[in-house]
Image 1: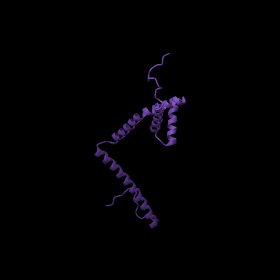
Image 2: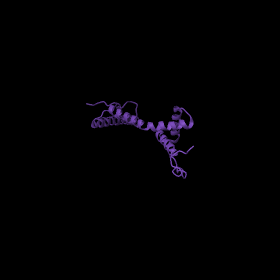
Image 3: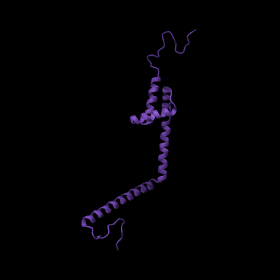
Image 4: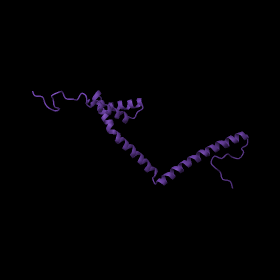
Length: 147
C-alpha cells in the first residue's frame, strides 16, 4: 500500500529525462523540508506555551503591557524636554516633539535618551556655581539691604 505525499513526483513521466526527474524530485524534497521545518517551529512554540502555561494571547497581552509601562516611564522626561524646547524656541508642543523626533533619527538615539540629555544639561546649567555663590563680605544670605 502506497501513500501519496503532497508534492510527490509522479512515476516516470514519459518524455522526462533522468536529470529532469531528479531536479523535480529535489524541488519537491526542498518544499517538503520547508513545510516540515515550519511545522516543527509551530510545534515548538505550542509546546513552549503549554509548558509555560500561557497562551499566545496572554503572551501578546504581556508584551503590550510591557511596552505601555516603558512608555509611561519615559513620558515625564520627554515632556520635560519638550517644555525646555518650548521655553528656548517659542515653538508649540507638537513642534517640540517633532524636533526631538528628528534629532533622535539623525543621531540614532532613542527619543527618551535624547530628552534625558536635554533635561540633564538644563538642570546642570540651572545650578548655581559654588564659587560664584558666595555672599559679598558683610552680607548674610537672605538678608535684605536697607532702603
